[in-house]
Length: 198
Image (cartoon, rainbow, N blue to C red; front, side, top):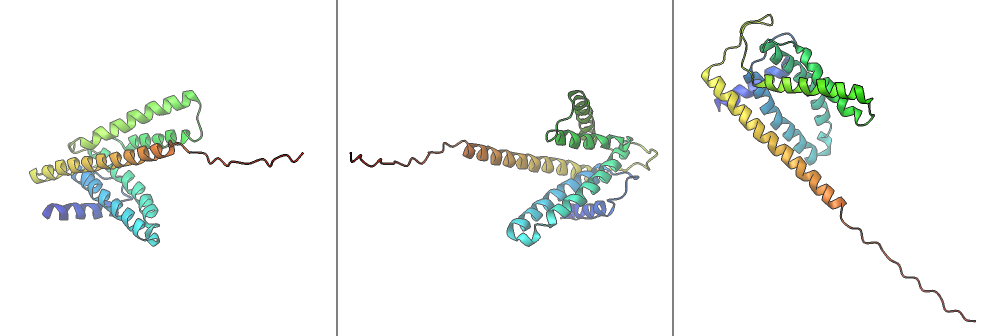
């Protein structure tokens, strides 16, 4: 119960600092936010399905989440001693995703793909790194033994939930594809030609 209170308090603090790109964010702040956020999104989806009146909440929260996540990731990069410059990797990933709608030249597309993959991979690796020593972004964030247990519990649970989400999405698309491949039996209408009276 104490862990849940810590995670909820941490989630509220992160949402309040949606504009802060200058400080540092430790692993507990980062992973705790991700875990609670997963349940918040599921709750909003359930509300949208239950009542259409709540359907506008999910897009509004999505916009808030993009801004908040960018600030959180910048602070997390600062905590490991890296610049928030690596956030451009995510932006390039969106550019690459949009290029499927409107294709870019091959050379530009290849360069953007390489930079995006390297940047996103680099960011993912940094999500698991412990706090660095004191740097220009602020003092180090100490992790107690309980903090570390909470961090690893959040990591494990979030990755399990994320895998469950991806598996459910995969099965949904697979079922849609199977249904679309079903043979459509054409409706044959027999017509009778009237006999020739000649």
